[in-house]
Image 1 (tube, one colour):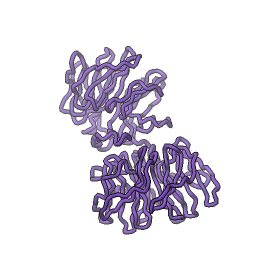
Image 2 (cartoon, one colour):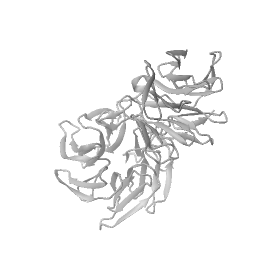
Image 3 (cartoon, rainbow, N blue to C red):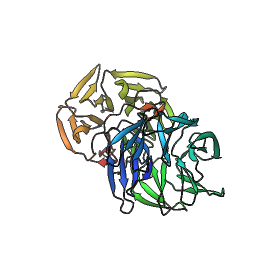
Image 4 (cartoon, rainbow, N blue to C red):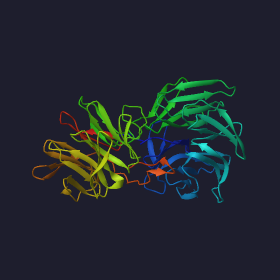
Length: 475
């Protein structure tokens, strides 16, 4: 099981441990780099919802950008939280210049702001950032920050003024840091995991790490460089030639939906990618159909490969293929099940659900839908309950005359006989706790925290696969 459900902002704390913000998990952990031991410092379910970056003040307080709700928090060394600001939209990059605190916004037209933990309105240093992100005070006393959408790095005085272009031509720069020799490190979040190194004399070198989804970087007192990955978690030390020493292993950040194709290959929808595929797709539901993969994104799209079949849906999750080739989707946010035909025409199959999560078909093409509020339905002229009183039923799959259901709230796999209606427990599942449903899927037009769910699939050989909370289980 992945220790991190994506690793985002990282910074060394006063205790010498590397602290890691986990946006998807909604928590902050600390890593002992000598042993690789991970401790949760700020658990999920508290005032911090979606920590994306963090920095430490001179008094040892941790400052956290909470991206989805648009808040910046201070956590004292005693563990007490106070709200620094709720006036920052999509707060992400955070840095100190001495005792002064600065935050930028990860959105088109964003701002770079100075915040005042002891009170006072934010002061804007500059605006029109095409998605800012991780930044740092440079040796020259300027704040350095990326423009993610334009591939540029800029700098500005902490006292304001006109920003200056430092460099351009960087592929999707997500973070800027300085090592102890004054070398500027620019992380790219693309599939190659490139780090652009610019020495104080201007020499430029690109180091390829192979880490998909680089997110942030920290440098220790011995000038060792450590990186995080939003797409696969983990913490790794990067040597100057690009070699890695993996300290905390990478893994799955979801996963959510799961499917098995005709060759027996398992594909997991892992939010930022299909596991094994490096494309950033925000995938959540997935189904194999011949040589094709159909996917849903909680941010509104249904795709066949790279072809968009539907968009602007309200949190589509589970997906199945009907025998006429139509894609049938549980549109969770709209409380309905829809079908998308070969011409991408959408029709409503059934509605009136609370939170439909997954769909499945039996051999006679009866459609089943799980509603996470406790019921599994068969859809005919109207939805008919075939199981109720369940605790968060999610993933569905049919094998023969049995309908398998992931009862996520009780960590059980259930089997419902489609002939007798008998329900039995197949066994317990080691999926970890059910995630709180997060409804803030967008903030200021940017993707926010996803809604977690456990997927289910039956392989051609009859093997049942369950996905969720960092693992894919074969039952």
